[in-house]
Length: 322
Image: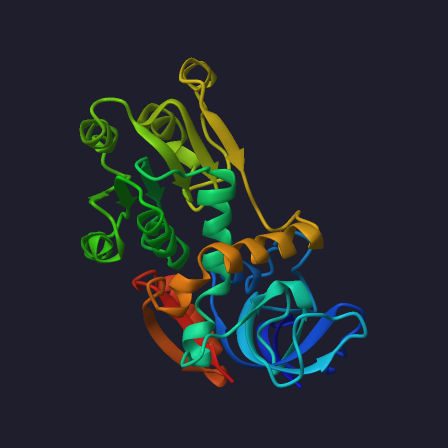
């Protein structure tokens, strides 16, 4: 089968053996793939958890049809239209644990479906499971113009957040955040953004920050979070290291939580997918939760798709079709 791998000459399309489903796995004929920031790093040879480096089939988000079941696979059958996440997505066929797939709603095509799995599972887990968001609370999403960030805004609004604030350093994308549920849009490079958040929350700060930036905004986040508030660190686009004011953290008694799929075992991931299905799936089916598609590329153009992502001028998801 054809696959996009990190090889001797960097990321390239090559022929590799078609995998076979074993145990609880399903084999999926991939029809569309969503691009994610972690994929961009892996095209340059960077590791993402245990994945990455020479010989790696790239990609982590896909939509397609089940063509084969492992002996222990449950909840799906051959012919089902599904979307999911996992390693080796950028290929004609990919394997997934049966508990890491979602059935595509009636009327939704593969392109739209390929935009959803990572955003839905990442942000439901961050906002609801770890962030303990309650109706009437206030939320700040740092890095809100990314695909997962836009989903976070929408889930926060769906769950009854009283004030939803989103950040973006790009003025055009920042102006669009209100279309996806933000009441207030801020620029995290503006030194006055903390004052804007405090002003919107009667000087208290927000109940919850979903942080995809970290780096040099870590201490500002602490200052913008209310006493006994929560910060869930999802990403580190602004840097994985930075100054951290431990005294401010302690004084405001902030619950600081880090999350990633990279170190979760399969039972945890199955539970995350089950929670999405049990809690917010009607909003997916009704298209209340959806992401804009910036551009679609054919599989042969996947290198161009990544160049478009690296230019960082897009809003929403970039999708590759097979």
